Structure formats: C-alpha cells, structure tokens
Image (tube, rainbow, N blue to C red):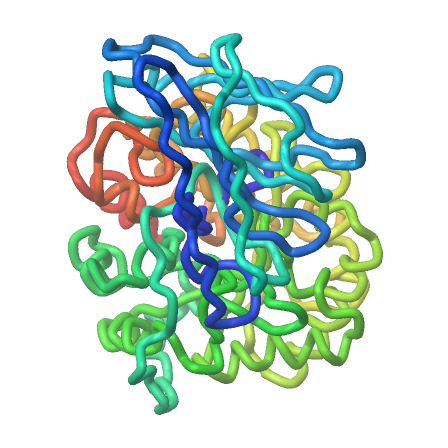
Length: 480
C-alpha cells in the first residue's frame, strides 16, 4: 500500500530476474565489484529502468572483521529525480540527500555479512554521492542491460522476495478453468480472502491450496496484476493470457473457494495509468477476467494513482463497461485509509466509480501503517471501518447495515512498516467486530508472512510471537 504495505506492496527482487518490463523479459542482476577488506562498503545496483524511473538497491558489506551495530547510508540524487517507495530500511530526505538507516528488526551486520535495502526513484540518473557511516561508500555503480524493461515492477508492502523465475513454465495451462463452485446459499460473495504475493508462489515451493488447507481458508486475493506497457502482466513477469497460476486457481475452486485478482499495488504502474484509452484499458481487464473465468476483481489504487483525476475517470469508465460485458462481475476498490476514514483522494475514487455506473461490491480499506506506533492497531482498524462506513453511507445514501456490507478491511498482520503492531489479539477483536456488524469482507497482508511466522524482513515475517497460520485461522472465523 502506498504507506508501504498491500501494501503494502513486494515483488521485484533485489536480485531481480524477469520482473519489470515486457512479459518474459529478463533483467540480470549485476554483480558488485569486490571491496578491500577492513572497511564497511556499499554498492549501488540498478535492478530495472523504465525510462521515467527505476528500481535499485544498495548492498552494504561488512569487511571490518567485527559486528557493526547501526548503519547509516546517505546518497544524493540528480536534479529532477525523486525518491519513491523503499523497503528494508527507514529513509529521510533533506536538501536533496536521502539518508537510509538500518531497520529496527536488523540493527547489526555481522563480520563478513551483508545487508541490503531497495528503493524506487521517479526520474533518471544514478545517485551522485554516497557515504556509509560518514565514509565514502567505495562501491561501483552498475546498470541494467540494454533490454531494460519498460515499466516499473508491481510491489506491495515492504520488500521483494529472494527469487522470481525468469520465464513462465513451458507447459502453461491452456484450458479454461472450471466454473467457480457456488458460495454458501445467501452469501453471494467471498467473505475471507487473504492477500497472497504471487511472486512468492511462482517458484512452486508452496501453493494456494496448501495455504488454504493449513490456514483453514478457502479463498484468496491474488497480488498483483500490473502493466507491461498497455498490457496486463503478473508483476511484470508473466502474461495472464498464458494462464499462469491457473492450475492453482482451479485447485482453490475445487475446494469450494474462489479468487479475487487484484490489479495495481503500491509501486507498479496500474493499467489505467499505462493505457491511454478506455477501450484499450477495458480490453486488458477483460483479458484477465477471461483467462481465469473471474467472478471477482480488485483494484488496489494507491500512490500517485489515487490522486490522478485522468486515470481515475478512465478506470471508472472502463470498469463500468467491463461489468456490463460480464454480468455478475463483482468489483472492489482497495484504498488507503486512516482511522478517521478514507482520504479525500480515496473518496474521489469511490465517487468516480459510482458516477460512472460501477456497481461497487466493496471498498476494502488498507488498515495499516498509520504512523501511530505505540497505539492499539486493532482499535485503529475498527475505528477505520466505522469511519469508512459513515463515508459510504453519505455517498450512497444507504443504511448503516448496507454501508457496513460495503466495507472490507485488510490489516497488515504483525509488525507494520511504521513499527506499529497488529497482534493476534487485535485480529480476534477485529473479526469479532466484523461479525457483530456484518461487514462485507476481511483479509490481511500477507499469507506467506503468516505461514512463515518468523522474525526478519517484513516482506516474509510478522515479527511477533505466533505459530504458522495463527492469523489465518482467526480470520477464518469471519462469517459475514
């Protein structure tokens, strides 16, 4: 999510292989030059470049022979370049200099070890200066090959996975997935669907079915489809038309569940930004709906996209036409939120969809990263649901009960990027509130973090005391 999930949110690897750009294009990670022993050094590596911006990371190498406690890396950017999202660090900027510090969960670098952090830059040009703990970084800058991708990677909260495969499997499924097994009588919708970073599932180490069976959930929100030019792409690595992940989706449906495919994310270019016409945009949404026989889609709109009137209008018009072409298609909007409710930009997105004629199923709020560490993140999530309900009631002129049914809530489980904590007790409180008020949907970011139940980088760990799938089992108790 723009406050770094959904958010939130995590695909392009620090050793990025085949992520951003034309589908199937590979971006080889560059190798830093060897440093002299006895110093702390840092090397800049550009992972991918799409002309108007790029993704990069710094690798800090501890050659001092002793454990280094605390590090601070300062780098300058050329004029016109602006720092975007970042992960595995905290960054402040002043006077054109960005200062990155070790994250709280990783305060030391053992002797001989390395630390990495990544970031997005809007604009062109590598850093113009670099110091690590006050001394020159001493690392060499590296650039991607000539076949650099054309669009930024799709990410969600925090940091990238270790590996992403370079090409779709040679035997990508070609048959149309079977029809979705109907939900229980009277529900008419998916009620519980944790988000899954599909980049973490693309190497085959685990599957949606395994996550569902272990966590006692049947359905999932699949993150993220973004753009490769004006073409739909799974986190700029796989063309959905090749039906990547279709076998896993079929397995979910065979157990009575279903999937929502989520478009957008925190740093990827959502299709409405990449496609310049409503017709082209609708065609790309339709390609994904048709490839997976979808009954549910989600639009995760954040960052610059949530404040761009042109692309908001284009998206709304295309979604309304898409819905007319696919009767019964349920559409949700996933938007940033504060405990006080949706931002003004988020409200504009909802109003635009309504005015364009979209029959909106849900407004799913990213209940995370409020910047209020130390407060009760369970209570803040509940407050955000109530505030959003009131806003939707005002926009749609419906009852409290009807407005609650239009609200979905997605917290970031465990430690958030802002160091706030959404614990197991918070999850129980939120699900109890959701059941009592019959809201429309619950989810969380992210299923692999719950499975791993570890301490470490936030893209893969919750950093709280838990057993695997504890959160999933709590959220599975939501009945609508």
